[in-house]
Length: 125
Image (cartoon, rainbow, N blue to C red):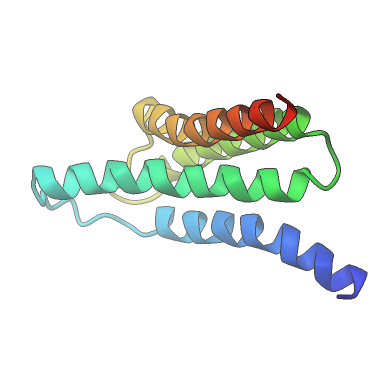
């Protein structure tokens, strides 16, 4: 595989997920209450999308950094993006960015980080 294609295969996925998250966050809310189940599913989606983003950033950064450094950098990028996404939602009609959502996003990223670090530790053992 050519070097440019290999680089695109690593760096495009996390950037694409960020674009999707931004687009979803830019959708105005109609303010309608859809119930507890939809609320819980949305929070699970937050957790999952940021877990995926963390994994994809780690995958890309791992080509440039050691395992632990890549985990730390990927976690930082992911949580920083979560915070900016919630700030972005403050400017969208009917949406509200909340610190709780940033914590849910960070929990998804932290779960992946812990799994990666655990795996890295077991590989060296």
